Image (cartoon, rainbow over all chains, first blue to last red; front, side):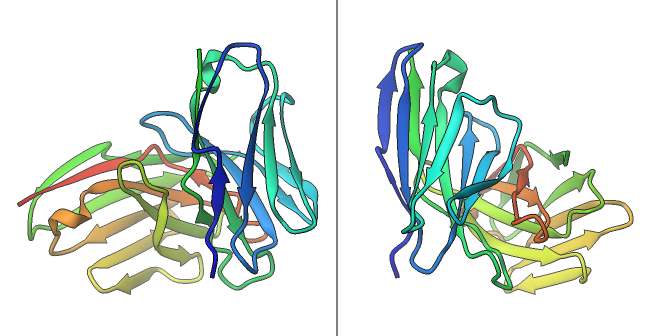
Length: 114
Length: 113
């Protein structure tokens, strides 16, 4: 069984730039969620994708956007990067309709904005 | 929206002692309460979860209790070991809403040998 994989693992951007982060969900999972984890804090929910559509969103501005592809993989795009966007971005996959709904996290993409 | 508060933020115990971490939540619609362990530089991993139709769940040295009326839930680790040292996060969500979780701020547990 293949786990959740994310790329890139680390990246550095400057303020105002755009970034795309990628996530491959665990085999058999159809739902992908993205979380932002600032240093020393708990993960914060950004949004969730199911059947290639956003079906839930946290308190993040529209410059955070995403996609889900037919193979259930996903992208997170952030435009007009700000210094406060520096964080670990975690992707989690799950299976909507399962009894548990357990989230399986990837190792994350650490974004530094200078 | 949901708000989850977690205490304490740091906890230091001697090996073999018990550790208790407490969380409160605000949204009465939440019905799923997982606990995640995150080691330094690693992904969060689910260690135990509880749903609102039960009050307690145990898995070896780990137990979770839930008080729906008071809107609080707790993680109990008995006979702590150095490898239990990590950051622990509680979370709340609703499996009617795709388990979009709201996390607490985390507890850094240090187990001294």
